[in-house]
Length: 392
View 1 (cartoon, rainbow, N blue to C red):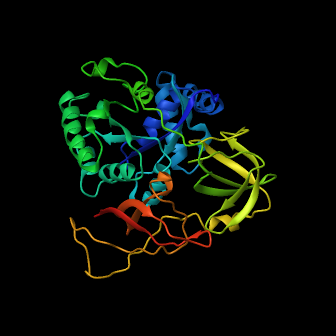
View 2: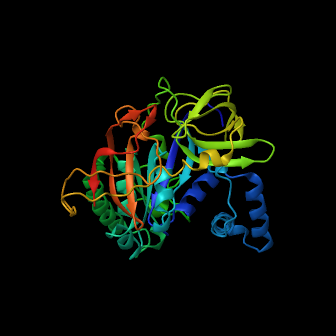
View 3: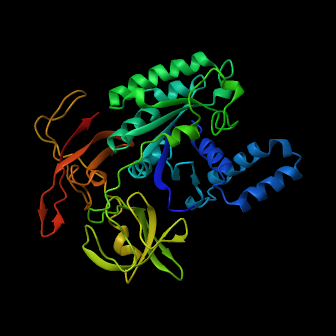
């Protein structure tokens, strides 16, 4: 996949068991984004078990099963190309236990694909007060993902199958909520799909001939090209840090502003540790220079993983109670929060990706907002947030 196409990051979000992995796997499988050796192995197994006619479904089932057993398919394989874009897929977990992981993944995305379970009971669970359909949509908007595609999944399992009325019912209710969050529903594509059967994923479907809108693949090509501030200083929030044998320490993350290339001297915050970049890679391919939007790994000189690991959790927060004693739903107030660990932040106006925050408590998102100003002392950020946000 060449660099001549614009690189965008897509996060797939939604309630647990809405079909995110199946939909993502099917799309990438159809577009050739999964290693051919993996596909060939599964196809051979399908033939041996006389399941040749169900080859696609068999491969998808095997991919899902291996992921669930913890046999990780390298994230570098989860990529594909459309006619217009070079896409990296960020798979956000739907289970509430992993909401912090979801926040980390979503904060790196240019567009969110919200997967909605269309089955009886499935949709209602996701859109309920405690469902992740609502929470993920709110977090996506707060974390700066202003473009969204909504896929009404499992249309093959509605009653009756591929029910137009059910689709319209879901579109109406989800549109109402997204409008409250801040999205403009008129600019969001709602697509009825079956992530398992493949309806309306990459091609038209006779099962859904009543729907005249785009396929999921066509909708991805209709995403507005994101603006990339490469003229600003480098800002690269770390997603993780790895120790790779024969190579050394490899931090990974998305370039938000500026560029990174071999030979560049970089400083890690909040520790202030300075070192030189030895090499930069994306999807196992060496880059001479990585631009904003690129998800990269880069090798650094003379830095241990433990020196960087302690700055990873930059979103944890703890509320300090002041008068009044509490805020109830609908109230507004000035709240001072002191993080339990040092964190790296910038003002939202200058560096939006580093100027947004979300606070979780007991696996619930309790606050989201933006950072209006930052006080700096001795070149380090004072770890206190004063911002405007929304509290639940």
